[in-house]
Amino acid sequence: MKKQHLTWVLAVAAGVVTMPVTAQHEERAAERPQSHEPSRPRANQGHIPAAPVARTDRTLPGRPEVDERHRINSTPHVNHNEWYGHDRPDDPRFHLDHPFAHGRFAHFGPNYRYSVVRIDPSLRRLWLPGGFFFEVAPFDWALAAEWCWNCGDDFVIYEDSDHPGWYLLYNAMTGAYVHVQYMGT
Image 1 (cartoon, rainbow, N blue to C red):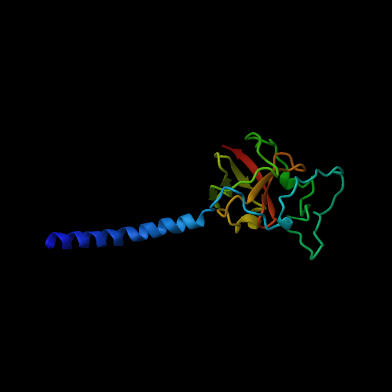
Image 2: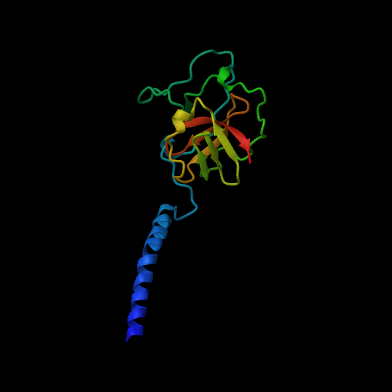
């Protein structure tokens, strides 16, 4: 009888010890997307936008184009497939002595959606699958600091056609974008 009682006590103890681990594993599994299909974008009327068009008249001074459809919004974003808030081509903040110093990132454009596998806010750096990493421009970090970096395949990289050496990181859930530099792998 004592052997059965000891076995029962050990079984209950083992269940109590493993229950939190099992529950934690189930919580993490519930947080992960159940399929590999990218989530549907919320911004830009549910569509990933085409790449921004390079401005042909680079002599025009002025401010970034402002979205006035529903309200004035100067935050860099995409709405109705229009890129708003993009800085002018001659903005000195974008001058790089050595554009593409770490090489070129080849997998950009609306056909590529990325999740962020690691973020270092103190360095403004983010890593994509495959070890590719980017650094957010210091003047754009305030726009991106509060983004949900681990929410799924919500990011698209575009080559910045107005600022050589820069890329645009587009957030498919918010519609906002920031300037990033490719830092290599």
